Length: 388
Ligand code: SF4
Image (tube, rainbow, N blue to C red; front, side, top):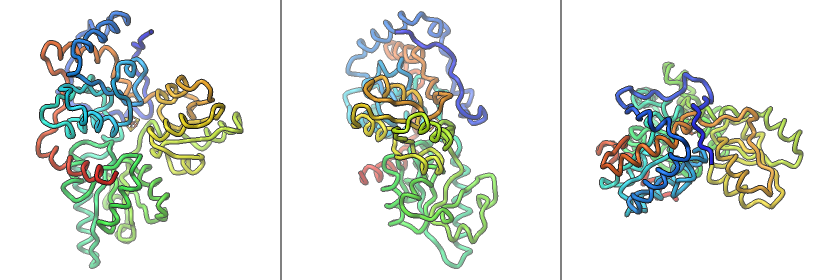
């Protein structure tokens, strides 16, 4: 099998790429990057065999096939973190995904667990759109607004899994929880049993699409822009709001448009359109169905032979489902296909580098969440687990 050694293409605006501090970056030896693909494959397989049961390799659905072929478990971020926490015999977890996912595996894995992210520059531009300091400022402004209104409201924070551990900890400490794209509705319903209003971050689209499904009017879901005083809202709008949505988005899923859906239906009149809830509201409304990555995989896999699907999610996953199910017509809604640029940073060369490091006793690119952050982040994650 040919390994893809090209540099990753970039989806979305280059300004949205995650900011990785330079001190984080450890240099991979160039010999790994220049290695012939067959040698790389042989050495990965050998290192994996030598590490045996002490190792699990996790592969997120959006990883390229050259990585997925080595994964012991594939899935979405939450499934991978949870499965890893159940496989207690493995001392090492190599997480082929992005930074916040490896953090969650470390939080749920306990102190004996060593979690490795093969390339530390594999972040998530959406997760980076909500920093802990901006969220703390927002919280303080909303609290002040509540106190001065003469009609105090109770605010509950809910963060999407795609966020830094510090934000999960913030939610844990303030009585909120974490949610995934599969259980966002349950999390929001729970939130409204705990307080009057919800602050949801970092993805405005998942929050808005879920709020719409719950029947919350659009004008009672306001957008919070951290660059603006009171998020760009009047006090009246804040007091009337039920859901306060952080101004964040996924640069991959915002590429999907209503025009693409119209074009797909013109070419394939029988097609069903299924999109991820990180897509914009008008795209979700134009589609036939909405689902998380796990739900998309399940829905298409269980559909009848001959069924046609236009899919609004990351192209590596779409191509994989298509190759696994040749009896169906399956294609990505976006004709200019382009993978998530940060997921794409996990190249087989990085995987080999960290595996051979483990064999030498080196924990290259280990992800460690500090104990105080892990404590509260775990509380927010456990509230979510109790829901499901
Ligand atoms: S697909 Fe979007 S949300 Fe997922 S890792 Fe890439 S940028 Fe982040």
